[in-house]
Image (cartoon, rainbow, N blue to C red):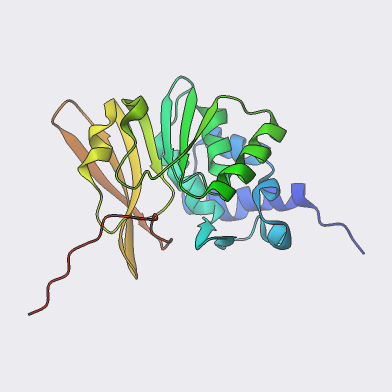
Length: 220
């Protein structure tokens, strides 16, 4: 039986999935090419680590597709000294990428089992500039604010203002907002204390953050 070639699969993912979906930031491509994504995938799905599909993590959570993760990283424009907030550690894969690219990452996870798994993988890779926090970040996490980058790995029907208020000047927030079947990825940039810009990036579908604020629907 031929052993699965993860290195070749990773190279193919970068060239055939990610680069072709308008991810042209060479720094992003380089870091994605270095991290063994299969390490963060549940063992029974490991050969799907580089497939263009959401991977079930259990607890109603998924690992986003590689192309979506790459587009999020590119939009966030992570700098080497950035203080980063990630809501939803999940598998820990995107956490690892943010840690390698940025200064320090505060990653919040509400499900203890997922947090423990992610910590094991991050430790194995020797990535130590990450603080894993257990808790509910669905309405923000201002404990270490202000942040240069905020990334949400689950969707929100409506985006609480608390997230953008936790941004430092010139800080970037990447969030997926909306309800099935229409979810839009947005880049919110803080220009000054009261001015923000909001850029639409692409559509996708991922589960909502646990305890995400509900969008009010009215019936007559």
